[in-house]
Length: 169
Image (tube, rainbow, N blue to C red; front, side):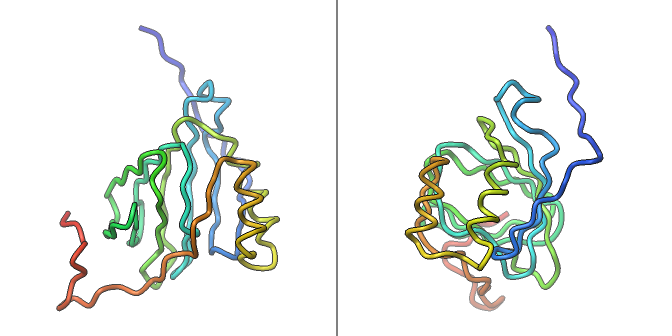
């Protein structure tokens, strides 16, 4: 059995997409894994997350810090530090940081994609805020991403009235 030792470089540049409160680094670009995966580390500002979207890649999220509200194919659930969430390719999904502090995730994207080019391009498209659906759709078409709606609101169910679709840990 053979293996390849991959290590992250400490000099990775952060990419910022202020319109969706995102800062990320790409410690494992697809070239390092023969295209099988990409790893990104993200920081999401309080109350922020991506627009509702879908793509063919599977994403595996490990929440490192904070708490998120996820939506996947119409189902909502929360995930906190230590939780792992797997979103299959083709599923409509989004998430939002529901804490009052920055939250962090480590995300594997399978198969890999050029996350540096994707998020740099997304930052350019969103440089004046979240653009209209037509402009976002044109960007997404280049990457095989379908943007389906706005980001998820950070409203949390009250403790005495939990959301009926909340998944138990």
